[in-house]
Image (cartoon, rainbow, N blue to C red; front, side):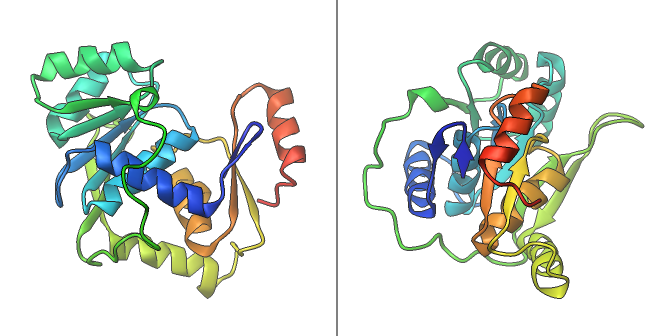
Length: 220
């Protein structure tokens, strides 16, 4: 991953996922919600949920408190990861639901993991639910779509082996929000599954986007 001037190799990504997992009380089958802007810590939290066999629930980081509360009430997560910037909305939404979910701020976590990270994350059950993504709610209230690891793996295989749109040498430009399925898969899960590079935009200003693409020699 790259983010501004920050470069994160796969080893560090794995270490960070383990560090986040140590702070997360979720168990296998629990839901872990993510409510934040695109940033490396979002990625760490996402994979930390998978490392524990928990179900990741990405939520629009721009959602107002009432919309966030409705999704939280439906998903009933045991943990909610958020950033300092999004903390007020997250706390208000949790208060509205009355859920006993633990709120974890990216900025509050210790710098180093308590234990060395394993060589790889545990292999999941393909039939297990990996993530719940909520629809836009255009025709009603948002609905949670349950996606299994087999669902996601089929997508990875289709665009990296069936038709090799994504290759390990590619450098992906990630600026669409990760809570949507297209950027979640195309800008994160697929490239990281095959060993490619993901450049996360740290600003949505046109000049900054162009500079990020040039600096990271983006191919997709």
